[in-house]
Image 1 (cartoon, each protein chain N blue to C red):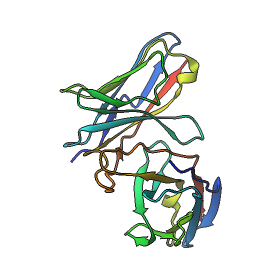
Image 2: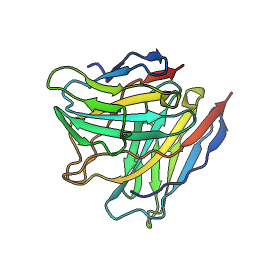
Image 3: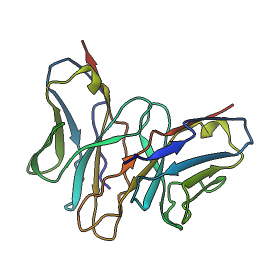
Image 4: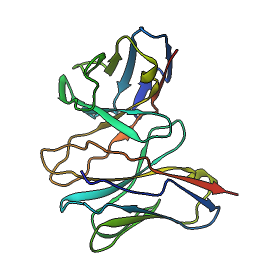
Length: 113
Length: 118
């Protein structure tokens, strides 16, 4: 499984767009990129997943360049409730396998009023 | 549709006692995963189970830790003779099935059990 590197912490203000970049230089051809969010005293929650280019859902967007060695999670117009730890995970979900999620330390996002 | 349920939410044990953590997966989910999280760290995979089978326990300490997922009832993570280093948050997750031809099967996490060993 590819190792990921992301900033330890970030600060933002309400209403701003937040971009969290994750480096995964050793990503394999069949690896997907997945982001999870964890609030204090709660379990992680799936946010978004992608393989290449751009993916968007109701919560976030995920930008993946052509070489796939990095990815950027974009949170539009954050609010105080977006204060959480964000984890970037890289792994393969091939037939016959299973999702053994490998979490790094994540990025602690603090949103200020 | 209730989510993944874990109990107790908080558990306090003295050194040498046993800790039993329970996890009820989401309805229809037959795959259960246990993770441990130390303060200020990410989650660490411990074990993956299907009904009545342990599929991967590569993240489990060799001694004192065991897990089961019986045909009926919740999955149990059991820690015997607890030590202070076992103090952590233990999360359970469930999914409908394992990886399937590149399709991601989302793991849904429970609220965790916070174990404190005195």
